[in-house]
View 1 (cartoon, one colour):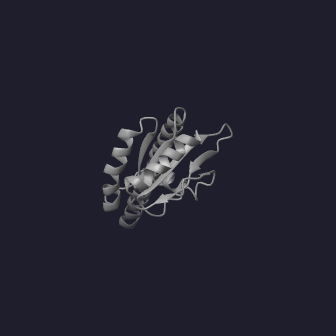
View 2 (view 1 turned 60 degrees about the vertical axis):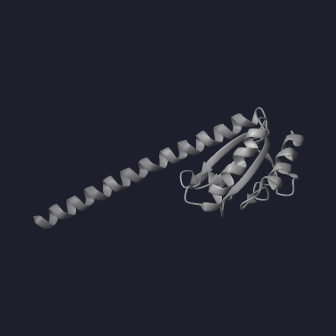
View 3 (view 1 turned 45 degrees about the horizontal axis):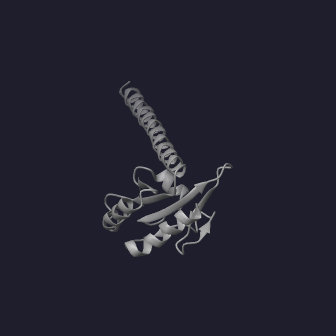
Length: 152
């Protein structure tokens, strides 16, 4: 009888654990949907600069003041911060393999595809090629933002 009670208790813990994990998946998708909606809303009025990072990443923390300075100068650009620990699904969609990573989205087409600026300042529809990986100074990022504004 005691063995059956232990087995029943173990099964109850497994059910609770899987229920909790299933509940965690939904909020993550909701967070992703909110960020995608924020990006798409920003694209209605101008380019969107996405900054992928994490609180534990020292280089990401060094990048934040650079991005804040750019945001103060370029009011026509929406700046979106994405914590990869909170929104891994969106980070995966943007091929984030190392942080910090920035992506500059120029516009969204009616078919759902996007236009980006690559690290050389050229327009591309290739999201993978558009990744700006690693820490960058303001003088490296500013021409890319100007290229995005010109491409609108």
